[in-house]
Amino acid sequence: MSAELTRAGITDPDLQRSYLACRDLNARHGKTYFLATRLLPPEKRPYVHALYGFARYADEIVDDLASTLTPNEKRSWLEGWSRQILEDLRSGRSDDEIGRALIDTVNRWSIPIEYFEAFLHSMAMDLTVTEYRDYGALSEYVYGSAAVIGLQMVHVLGVRDDANFQATLEGAKSLGIAFQLANFIRDVGEDLDRGRVYLPLDELARFGIDRERLERRTVDGDFVEAMRYQIARVRSLQTEADKTIHHLTPESHGCIKAASELYCGIVDEVERIDYQVFNKRAKTSMMRRVAVALPAWWQMRKLWK
Image (cartoon, rainbow, N blue to C red; front, side, top):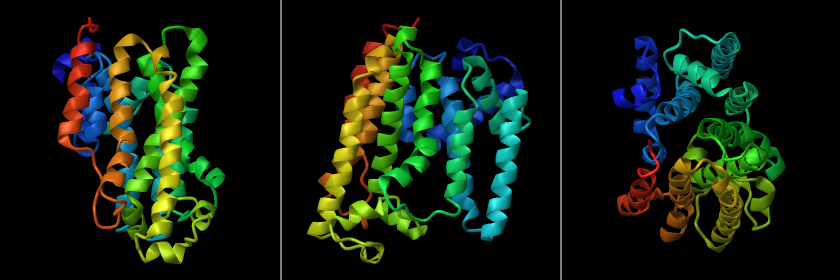
């Protein structure tokens, strides 16, 4: 990592420690993302670690608070922490270990602060919202929790031609949402354990499933059809996003293609385990990860300076 930091021009010791902490979060909690990040030029990797590290840290805070604080205490703590992060983003400096790398990344790549406002808004929603009546309502949440991650990434990865910047942002939004929806499909049981349902209730109702029936965690024909409906949306979003990958700088293609195939590939694994998401965890195998990452790494390394 020290070589990556040097290549990225990150020399301040405190800042280096912050980036290393973000990298550690990525390595421990985001194995697929971490693998995809390794397909980027070394000088870009620390900034992606910073973005992911911040997002993961915030997500872990929300889930950890659920087991230690009352609802009012959780809301108060998150509001205070979010307020401080946003103040740091606006001032351009932070004393927070994770925040230092985040602020440095935002400043270097001119990432809009409103992306982080939307992200923190979605984190706050997790403290009070336990279900979504329809996809429109869910879209408010997934924009902040996932789409903005893709938008942030575009600023770091760069585009070949500024004329394609907006189209690339739209593709990045689609891919971020696809990742999140794949997550929801895989984690139906885990989310129920936390008292949440992220599958739109009106879409479940089309297949005769209400929350009470979902809570019974029965994998029958209706449930399978409902999951197939959700999986089709993931694949549609992935297809739309794939159309814009070529707008990114060439040295970024391998990372995004690998992330797309591996993370959206979660739904392939859901199908492979016959939709038994309540007692099995769908995940991409090590063999598939290597099969995707190794050719991409070999091709991308030729473009690294």
